[in-house]
Length: 405
Image (cartoon, rainbow, N blue to C red):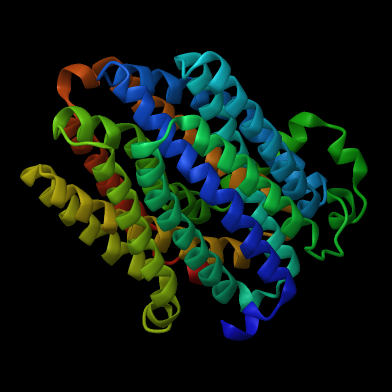
């Protein structure tokens, strides 16, 4: 890992990702807390997340097409430039008009759109720049960086949101994106456009439907990869839905303040950080899919304990293991995808799985938006436990994927 850190491309990717992610992370924590705190109700945040997820569902297919058609480095640079500009505008709007639900919705949509562009683009760029034997080490390095960022975002959000208004966080986010622009521009990539990656087959790119369906068709032809992909996204789906449940559970269910929310986010990052540090060793002792089966089963047990005890410390501990599980699953599944999916299809395949995950997310957020003020966030986590058990079953059914793909 130390030798890889000496690689200028990896350093620039890490630093660009660190600065953009810490600002975006603080902003998302702030949006969620402000939405719930305004009237002590869950439904406003649910509506914000539901609108955002529907839009992601519409934009999702185009993200994969863009990633496979245009230089991945240029996409990341443009994403950071847009991020710096829009958060600066949001900060000014917040000062002039106050923190309204409309502004919170627009900010959340913008943050999630940037995230949806960023992570598939970064994965595709890593696959493009580095060799196959480096994927595991590069992904571990990036996972450690992501979780250091998450720890910083959680700690800073707790301090800033306790003492200052949301617009201060937005100004800081605009500045962090600006720094990310500088680092992302220094990434060296010799690859050009999607057409060059596919041997100049430009005619195929003239057909929007062909572009849209290519990723799904590839998954349908590789059934184990399809089910593995869906199950590998389940912890991430759970995290996204929990981003809705957590502030509601803490504010309304446990009657605690924003410090518990930021502490949970910080603990989440610690769990994920440990995953990034230890995954290389664990991967040398057990196959990735077998480890995912064991880890998902343990996660289900931890989640049952959290639901049964219902106090802030069990919730914080649960969030720490959630961080470990999400990071572990993302790290191991990314490596499997990079080794099995052709470079020219990577963006569309990952985005196709992401689209399926978005549909599941829409369903859960819609259900919770309509019912959470009645059933309570604790019951919401019971429903998510069912999702975890489904993921466990899928991992078990695809345990031979590394031999068959």
